[in-house]
Image (cartoon, rainbow, N blue to C red):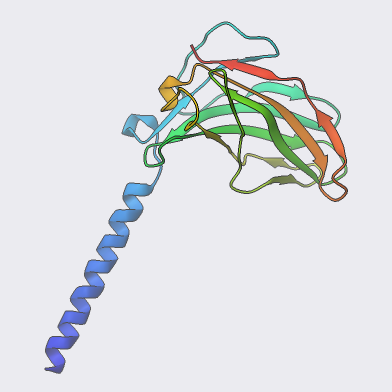
Length: 179
């Protein structure tokens, strides 16, 4: 009887281990060539820009905004196949100040529908350091159901002192076209 229980316990352990491995493999994001992640490049401007579409495995950074406090560059707009109704905006933000800052996006829109950009964790950046924390682009209340439906995004960049909450930067609204 002990031998049967031991074999059953080993079998159950092996099945659970295989299930975890397969789940992990399925949920790992991959490049668009595997059909799991799609990314778009685009052209930034303070006014609507000429249409441009590209797919990149190594996205090129495109400057968006720079002053004495921060430098912001666009990296990519992407989606993960197993997360419906959401895209991700990847920016690189460099803190050029001597204080810890909090960076956020305001005045968001997708294809002319107002949205509120989110973030899984706030983008706090120490002096002299950078962050690539992606911003969440909710598509549920827009006409875009997936990355390919996004024709234009807009946002402004806000920067605050993390400790005092003092507003350090509020930019104009930037538009990015993907047509």
